[in-house]
Length: 307
Ligand SMILES: Nc1ncnc2c1ncn2[C@@H]1O[C@H](COP(=O)(O)OP(=O)(O)OP(=O)(O)O)[C@@H](O)[C@H]1O
Ligand SMILES: O=P(O)(O)OC[C@@]1(O)O[C@H](CO)[C@@H](O)[C@@H]1O
Image 1 (tube, rainbow, N blue to C red):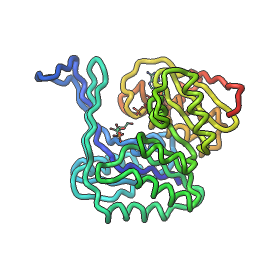
Image 2 (image 1 turned 30 degrees about the vertical axis):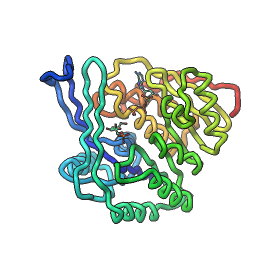
Image 3 (image 1 turned 180 degrees about the vertical axis):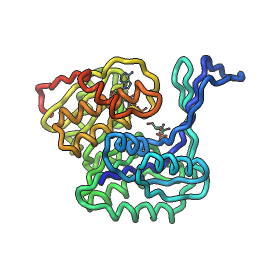
Image 4 (image 1 turned 135 degrees about the vertical axis):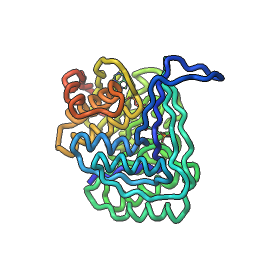
């Protein structure tokens, strides 16, 4: 079974306006709410790709209830821990450019943290655990470490899609998959990456440190997959970007969906990039139909060098 874990879910409030001027009254031309948070996005895309999964994490208040209701409506299994306070509302402003304002999230008590660890202790060898997104302010980075330790003891494969210190600490646990974007890859090594050469250098370092698969996402420029035997470079399909929120999460879901269906590494990577781009070209997350439509448009080059 695949478990996604979103410690800090969100309701994504997407506001479209022709012009956004700070300090003025701006009127939206369109508004929409989506259940959000990185792990929840992974769960929603996996389900659309017919892969059963269970969403874990903390939810609270009317916003948390909205997430639970929406996932239920989409027939996604959940095993959330309900906490006092409100799940955050993240604002996604779509004017000429995309601007995001992410909330902080509720306070999580020690009792609720332990309840989540107890759920991780129920996972079994062969399960996959996706740890995705930021941590609420009351949960420190070592919480991901505790979860990874429990997962490792049980030979559960771990996927990590987060940033900052939490991402840095994940490397030592030899995760199955890391999906940093170029900026997050740089942050991992305390550098800022500006060239393909540097992306290759630091991606390879992660593999040499024991990470099994690394996908560095490069937005409209595609992505690079690193594995000990091969490096694959993908060009993203061209299209009109409607919403890049969740594109990276869709990549994670696409890769896992293909992997559990025993696709080759190259096929899984192709599926991953197609899913990322399909989300970028959609208002909400991608649909299976759109992912399949884009598959042939993902151009992959196999690099000769081994890591
Ligand atoms: N402009 C675009 N055109 C085509 N594909 C895109 C575009 N932007 C994103 N994608 C697709 O989505 C994938 C992930 O994008 P990106 O690198 O922006 O992820 P991210 O930074 O993790 O995003 P997020 O945190 O918003 O989910 C890319 O590898 C690509 O396949
Ligand atoms: O604040 P975090 O946890 O880093 O990111 C949260 C978030 O921006 O990520 C998802 C897109 O990847 C959105 O659904 C959500 O609002």
